[in-house]
Amino acid sequence: MSSRWQISRRRMLQGVGAALALPMLDVMGPTSAKAAAAAGKPPVRLACMFHPNGVYPKAWECKGTDTDFELSEILQPLSSVKDDIVVMSNLENTTGGGHVGATAGFLTGVNMNNRKVATSLDQLVAQRVGHNTRLASIELGTEPPRQGGASGNPISYANTVSWSSPTTRVSPEINPRAAFDRLFRESGTSKKDALDRKSVIDLVLNDAKQLQRNVSKNDRHKIDEYLNGVRSVEKQVENTLNPPERDYIPSSSPDEMNRPIAGIPTDRGEHVKTMIDLMVLAFWTDTTRVSTFMLAHGFSRCNFTFMGVKGDHHSLSHHKNTEALTTDYTKVSKWYASQLSYFVNRLKNIDEGGTSLLENSLIMYGSGLKDGNGHVRTDLPIVLAGQAGGALKTGRRVMCEKKTPLANLHLSMLNRLGFEDEKFNTSTGMISDLV
Image (tube, rainbow, N blue to C red; front, side):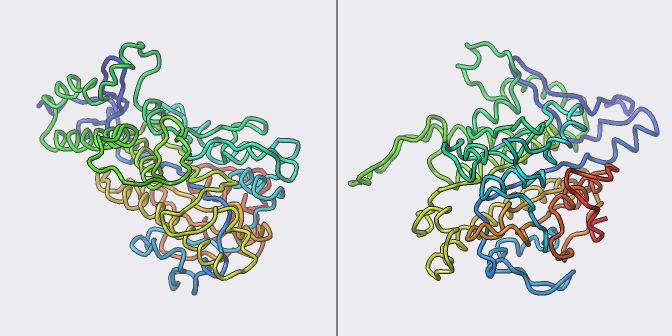
């Protein structure tokens, strides 16, 4: 291979009805000193993960401060990545409106008024960096909008944390196949091609083989590893929605079983895991640099009987300090924390040329409520993860001043992402320990 032969960082694998971005390769050499500096550092990605209904405070609180702290019961699933997270304390969601208002305020810090909020953190970042990628952002979820009213606000408005303007909510995609197609398949694909459902990898394989003939052994290995990763998730999506023929049929079934919505996995764990894998792929392929994931609807009544939990999550959150309910409430919160752990570990194990995908990401995880019982909005359960390209020091607990506006965290995150905003919605200043 000629040492002078190079390809653009924007180079994509092309095929009929498909386009797939490439990971960072050695052959993506810069053409100038300025370009060399830019090309040598992967972009920073922003991911925001929301879980509904708050937590049981006594099971969330950590002991200790700064780097000398112990993870709480709920956060135990994060023990393997303790050095990669920041546990935040004393942040306040100043919004009202119960579960709906708390959800709308999670990434805006603004109280919903007459169905108006403000542009959310993720969408502001997407508007600024989205021109660099195929998609400005991807919004994922697991539950469709619910109907009804709550505290004067439609419950359906709690299906998202993303707002592209004060009056425009961005609803998440809950169908794994649709999300995959949006990420990796070109729009305008013919109906015949869509029905054929060819693998994205198969569609771009010829282009990939041609490229591999002209790159180094190291780059060929990177391309193979990358394509295998994409195919693995694609197969996971297909197998989840079209499972193989069963080799065992139970002799009995529940008295009542609702037919699942077409295209939505029936296994909650598999659904969440697949969506997380899609987020990882979206970042790894640089298809987008901004993603949100609603682990569940902000007014979720999802049940967790697969863990032996009785009652739906929303009802558990109004526990009235009853031990049986707080125990199950905590089990659900711990399960959600384990999903963050899975995401962080996936990102941590992907190399981007000397740094990991996790090091080049900034993740915000948490809920808009501290405790569903009484709709408590002070001292929110918030965790940050990833090093934001070296801009965030992790492995610590940050104690903010009491009742620090949540928007102050948003503003500080913008700063860690390289922006120089002096204010974000209702913010009153930066969080000093994150600057």
